[in-house]
Length: 216
Image (tube, rainbow, N blue to C red; front, side):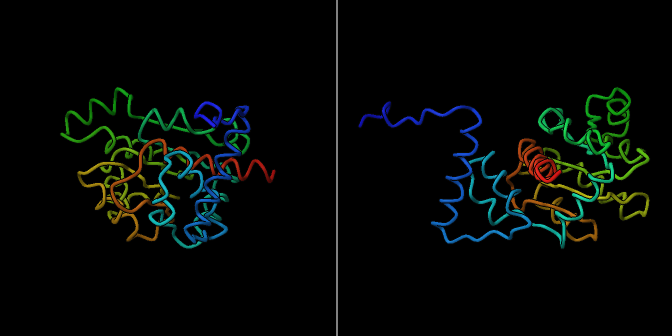
């Protein structure tokens, strides 16, 4: 059988189903048993990245998935640090519960303040988001300074996020910023190490939203 003959001819909806079957098979081969409550999130992160390291590196605070689901059901909004994550999160499902997604990275006021203060837009955008008068889930996939901003506001008793999904990617301050969040009592899903990304942040949000939608 040549390579072309080995290609699986699948419809779009069948491709994702087959991908998750392969992920499950691979995890079984590696002897990895995922906690039931975290399984769909870890598998979707692997599906998005084709990286099985997420089975080990994604960390969850106690009852994290239960808490973030309760927040969404009660109408919490999601704040991201990139327009890519904003685009990727399923806003239709979130809207069923009264929530919406925000990203202030392109906000002119944020840009001006960041320039004046010598800070990143991500840092300032978290401060702007904190003024939203409802519980917020922060899905950070790019900028460690966003996590630092949230941590500093928390330390000063100015603001406490309802939940943090902390998966920024990169080399500068990435690991430390994630560690800071994991040292607080803020409920979190955080990926240890350098890996992450806006696609992973969106994938984690969607895994939670899809699970709620299936059970609705």
